[in-house]
Length: 250
Image (cartoon, rainbow, N blue to C red; front, top):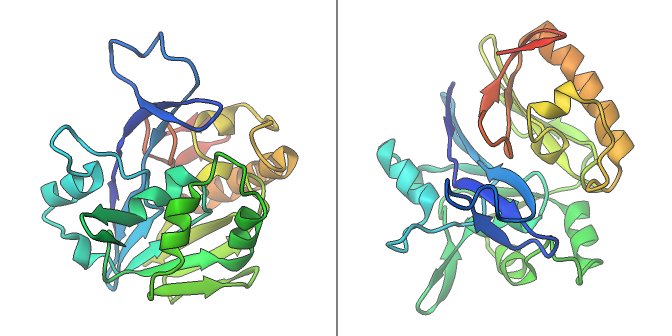
């Protein structure tokens, strides 16, 4: 497998979930939670798999950072075959839609988009929650290429498996991609940064922080035993790690 981090940048997220791009000049002065926004493209023998879609951040020329990064890899958005959404917070879905002069269109027009039904129901019950961008969400779910998921766990194909684990949101789902002897794991916002494996804490920003903490302990053990490559969506510095021992990450 080929793993391509598609880092839109490091950001500060305010209480109202407004994102400010961090630079050397403002890093120490901007208030809010500091995090990266970093989707991943996984290329297997059969698919171009995008894990979450970012926030659709644009450069000064008005081009999305993700499309620019794909271009440097000689990959067109039309080549993406699957978009796997862990949950529906704005920083994970806003990059799935591209605004045009006449409306909107899918940013990855040939991709099947996998969405957990129960996660959508939870979002729609929380219309005042600033973590969601309902304008984008309503456009997203109107697309014709949605694959609605409602099982607790299963296989999308021979390479991709998923499980609804909760934690950060009630019905957040995580993914494993396996090819030959290689295992890639995407824990999304239950395991967004490497520090979450060093400090075993229940975070108040999670819907069920204790559940997320317990999941990390379980995954840490399996990741070490099976040598998972762990993808980190919100880590400021790292993209992919492996755990070589209980106290060491590479």
